[in-house]
Length: 85
Image (cartoon, rainbow, N blue to C red; front, side, top):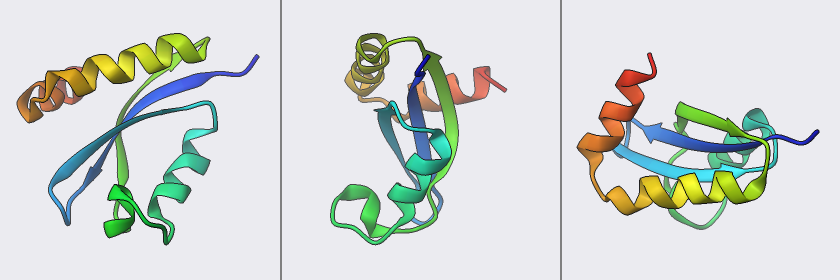
């Protein structure tokens, strides 16, 4: 069975979070974010996984990603990360 993930990355250099989802392994995904590429996460190479959730299907992972992004609140993201520790 293929798992899907909704994840939050954090860059200390940018002091910013990035929210995404993937059907790939989290290790592979973080390598891609830290590789040379255009786009938001290509601006720095210090992204680390701060939080993730596992799902059985893409639909649920994507729904959760959109829910977190719709918060538009750094403080709510920080609360979610802290509550998971």
